Length: 275
Image 1 (cartoon, rainbow, N blue to C red):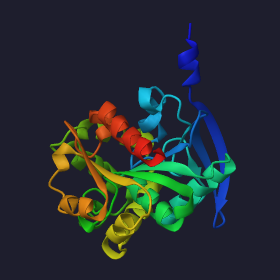
Image 2: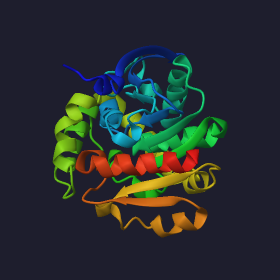
Image 3: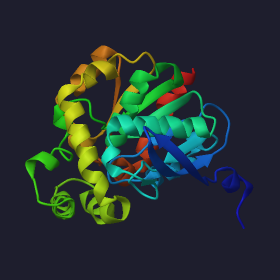
């Protein structure tokens, strides 16, 4: 028997059809109703909405409305023209999906690719965002340790690049690398890899991401794994009013290595914003 408390925490699947710049997307999402402002979560490259699903069961977010979505070309979401994918496109899809389910203002979280998407969304739609937890999302060229491989390791085909990418990731001596590599073929449509990676590299190298992030007017924090504590810009962030939270026993994927600590950090910023 499922308890009433468990039923209240249950995520419901949602299917949304949206069109951005003439490109059609079928977006798979999970939504949970609740009390308070919603939390919208954007996953990273090679991940899915399920990365955040346990937020529905975490005590500090058990009653919080949640909206989790697979980006087009990832998980169960589809796109009619993968060449249209870039970070700007992902921003517009996320906004279209929020609009479709009636979410106006919201707390925002994004990891890696999703962190960069969330940053661009927050920078261009400041009136809609209440707080922003950036989980190792790109704010500097040094953050392209995965995406820059599209430049560093050119191949004749997308399939060959992706296969080699998986093997390189598997051998990164950091927490959760093997788990992440194992699931990549199940979570990523190969045609999505190149356009997304190229867009991430271009933005990280050319756009003023750090200025955008530190200039946001609402509570924000940068969350990183303890194995990535050497990121050069971490000491700079508190001087600009950005919180920095280190997740113990984890690297780039704290939702795999230490999820309770990650959920606690995310919930802490929401509590701060709502005070």
